[in-house]
Length: 172
Picture 1 (cartoon, rainbow, N blue to C red):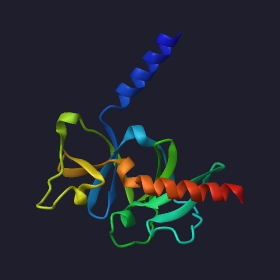
Picture 2: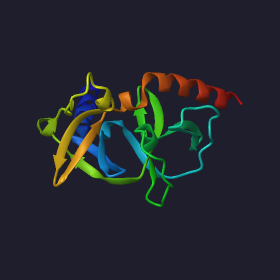
Picture 3: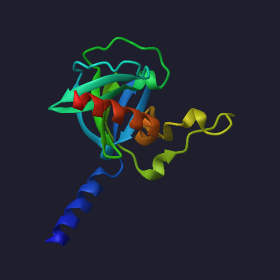
Picture 4: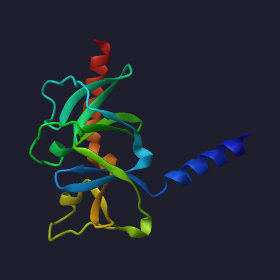
């Protein structure tokens, strides 16, 4: 019995290997490993959190579970834009935390093999500050996709702050 379950887990991991949910923000295309993605939902009402960072848009009630929502565009220090009918929320799981990422539009699910992923250039910057969310670049067709590390995108400090805010919201 345990062997059958393990085989199913390995098969599921194999089907997700190299798969990335890609989306557009600004003029760039980004990708997140599909293993982090729970679902994609349409924009919904978000309850603002007072005094939160500007990229933390607030909390969302998703089928009775309160989840924090982050605007990826604002997180990347781009100008805020109005949400459209193409704007959606990618619900991801990072370190046992469910978080929503607001993106301008979903592109597709791409298969990108490890051998096709290049490290991002440093472009003369000291350290890796400009690459703090991007761990790799991949060319698919005529497009270069910036591959994101969701753990760095969310950040430990943000997870800690959001955890406190969600707990306070649950107690009310």
